[in-house]
Image (cartoon, rainbow, N blue to C red):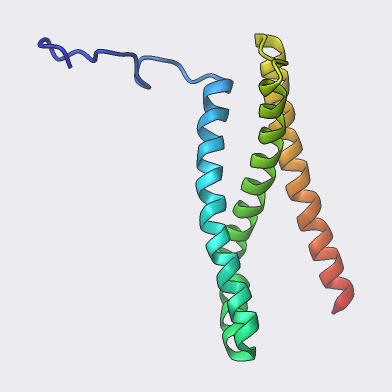
Amino acid sequence: MDPRGRPLSPHLQVYKPQLTSVLSILHRITGVVMAFGTFVFVWWLMAAALGGEAYSILQEIFSTWFGRLLLFGWSFALFYHLCNGIRHLFWDIGKGFDLTTAYRSGWIVITSATILTFVVWVCAYTSIGKLL
């Protein structure tokens, strides 16, 4: 802060959110969500290795509406991070920096992650229904 109490550099309160900045922030958030989800996944693997009682406790947690919401969010984070990572690979080779392409690829990332998430969940529920 300068002596008059004004910030020295631009910050979130100055700029209007744009698709590119929102996607950048979402990429960081999904990275954290995936890291948390990885710990849950390891917990699930350990419960499966420990036997039926530990596994059934974890399955009860995942079968609640909140547990499924967490799994759904984790799967969206995984697909978003994957699709946006591919977008970043194109940026690494110098492609897609112009504003039109950046916005188009951003919407492709959001759409692809959403479609992939729903396809996986529909397929999971369909195959579970066939197993029962």
